[in-house]
Length: 103
Image (cartoon, rainbow, N blue to C red):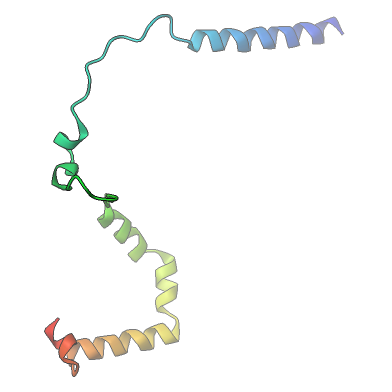
């Protein structure tokens, strides 16, 4: 029984020692302030009075992963999707609608 108590006490002491070892031993070093975001990012092109701002980063990578996924391959095998795709290609190649012809 005393051995179990010692191991619990030692475990708790070890945890406390690890936590204290992770604490900083003083004030963090003074760092230089970063440049304002508006000067170094795409925010330079955004007007001041916008309600919200969204960017898309690494969209080509996302597109490539989705386009080559197994889910899209299975989706393309569905008969109604194949029919719709063939109809869209037929309209694209021989447009009878002037709006599609303009594109």
